[in-house]
Length: 335
Image: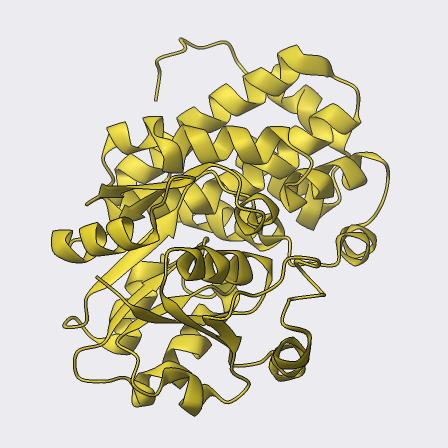
């Protein structure tokens, strides 16, 4: 079981997970490969004032602006960066790894330039011999940071590693479940962000609860369709990292992706909405990446495709929803 862990990525989610590992008694080092000014301020402030203000760091959680110092003597590393920064982060970490290092990540999304999932990127950069795992599921950073009850999934082909992580991070207010379906857990995390933008747009246009649940339900079908084609287990999408994460992200305004959809429905540009939200909205890049992966595989994903068309082709949100509603009639179980 990890007793010391380095969390690389000092955004809201990285900080929240660092806090949770600290609460269960780990020595936690919070570092990064680009956020040096932010990390230096956290050394002084003993909190992340930018992303999780008013949640003080316990004594066993410390920020490390120097990456070498952060990783020195650490076996277990958790990477929490946006998907477009994962490869670069792993490449910077690789020469600093110990012989017995283990790496997990809470990164969600396909790599835009290659269409690869995070575990594929990690295998290319790190090789096949390092134990790896992915943390995912229905979680908002603010709530985890505040210590509210939460459940999530940890997936790995190395059962002992997944179990050790789950046992370490779990507490009376945080429960982790294990899975061996890395593909399913990662696909769930990648696709739901794009779908949440669609749900936000629907609500922003005033289409109501009926439309919202139709988008969520049919979005789940699209998610499963793509995941199974990529080798995932269908049942994974009925769990926390599938349906759970999708429903959470589509229905609560703590979701940056949902807020992006609301802003687009109000007539704002992606850039204006991004400036207003002040954090990375991964669904914007996810819509393009998922669209391209699905197109390459010949997988039908009409909701994702309409979200892509709105963001990248200038289609009006109202026209996109109408296009979905007027598609040819088919059996619900058709794939």
